[in-house]
Image (tube, rainbow, N blue to C red):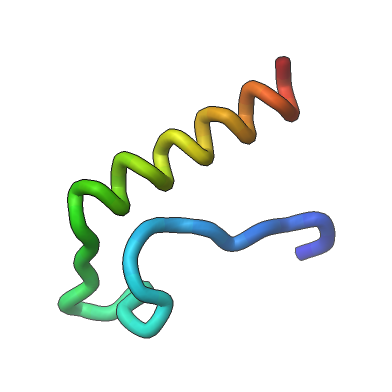
Length: 43
């Protein structure tokens, strides 16, 4: 996909695996980054 960024919480090695997990701190931090990115892109 052109002009796309893959981003999310937790270790990349665990992404989309049966035992995928992340810390609450990682989840909160990545949610903040995504919210700020949307505000910057959409306004």
